[in-house]
Image (cartoon, rainbow, N blue to C red; front, side):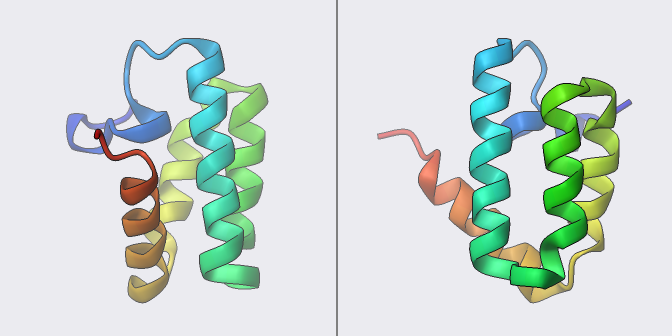
Length: 85
């Protein structure tokens, strides 16, 4: 189960399959760009979550395990990409 505070982006409730997939893929691409090989575990978990939603908590744990600077860059980039106009 994902705590309410962590229900954002691909971890949000009530997303369609297509929207969750798009958000997971964009977060994975951002992870590759911002963290490089340091984000490999997160990228792998995001890829697994594309096919199995029960992997979302594992992906969230991998995101939380990133070094502070990598995590901040990934989160800020995702937020900027998905910001409402």
